[in-house]
Structure formats: C-alpha cells, structure tokens
Amino acid sequence: MSDIEVKDLPEVKLAGPVITVDGPSGAGKGTLCQMLAAKLNWALLDSGALYRVTALAAKQHGVALDNEAGLEAIAAHLDVQFKVSAEQAGVQVILEGDNVTSDLRTEETGAIASQVAAVNAVRSALLERQRAFQQEPGLIADGRDMGTVVFPSAELKVYLTASAEERGQRRYKQLIESGKNASLAGIIEDIRARDDRDMNRTVAPLKPADDAIVIDSTSMSIETVFEQVQQAAEKAGLLA
Image 1 (cartoon, rainbow, N blue to C red):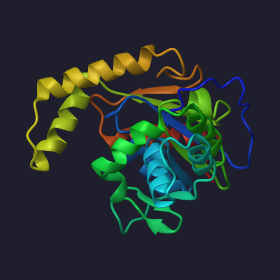
Image 2: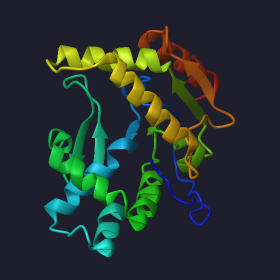
Image 3: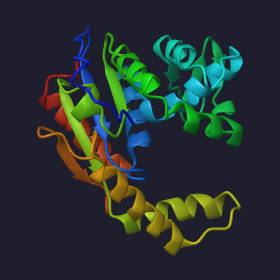
Image 4: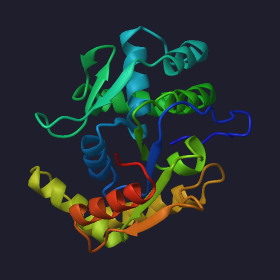
C-alpha cells in the first residue's frame, strides 16, 4: 500500500489503540477486520481502498490526473469513513457523506486509481491520512504494511497468511459462485507472482512486523482466527 520512503514522515501518535492486520490477498484480512471492528465497536481503516477513494474524489471534484498538487490535496484531506454494520454485508465506504461502495468497484475507478497511485506526492499524503484514522476508542487497520510502516507502535499486530493454493481455492470459489469463468491454476499462478512482487519490493515489502502474531489460516475457519486474535487482544489489555 504505502510504497514510499517513510524516514521523512515520522509517526504521529494520536489517541486510541490500534490493531493492525497485514498479510497477502485472500488470507481473510478483510473479514477478520470487519469482525473485530464490529465486536470492539472500533473504527476501521481499509487501506487497500484508499487509492480508489482518492481516484473517485478527484473525479468528483474535477481534478485532472496530471495535476499533482491537486491530487495531493485530495489525498491529504479525504473525508472518508469505512462503516461496518449488522444491517449491511461487507464494508460500506462513505465519501463526503455519500455511500460510494459500488462506485469504487467500477473499471473506470480502478483505471484512475492506478494512475493516481503512481504519483509520489499522493502516496506520501495517503500515509499521513491513514495515520489520522487513529482515534478513540480504537482502530482496526487492514492492509499490507500497517504494522511495519503506518502504525509501527500499534498495541497489537497480526500477520494473517495462508498458502497460495488455499487462497487460490477461495478466490476460485468466489468467482464461480458469482457466475464468472475462472482457471484455478491461473489464479494460483497470479497469487504467487503478486506475493513475489510484494515480498521483494525495495520499499515497504510485505512481511510480518517483528512483534506481530503470525497466523496461518490455511486450514482454519475465520471464526477460529477471530477467536485467536480476540484472545491476543484480551491479553494485550485491549478488551474492556
């Protein structure tokens, strides 16, 4: 997520404890974070969605993709919330008071997001914007470098992983159930290639923080994972 040099951006310690959940795609981070946010009634940060949110905000405000200063300002001042509720499945993304969850999934938004992500000033601004999510009573931060880069002083850090084969099976099942054609072998190959890129990049590589709890969910249900993290949170004194 935050593939930038962080030495010039010192962490700002704000109010409220943080639980970070990092790991590769398909390990179950999103579901786990939703469960934790709902259980603790804490705020949620879905860091992986922020480039799409920035792209959508830029489009809505008429900021051109070659206007780096404008894009940086959009990223730095994003009015966005990630909501979890019993009434609606998944995370609802609220941008400037409007539910934009479905808008973020469009191909157009994705295409703009990839261009926005290439702007270094945007990446720097989003790092600081992520840190501003820290608040009372607490924050659940979902991403790839939450515990290593964004919130290195988090009270509890979790690194959730699973084998490429298991993550591929999960993705394959999702696609088939949604009526799409898919190749299991191709999905697994793509996952391994993405893992290799993420784990071997020079800046903010995907890896567990030194003090993270590493959980392999390959043969575990999400409920079992949740119970383990909940026990760790209780041990860390984060549960009332």
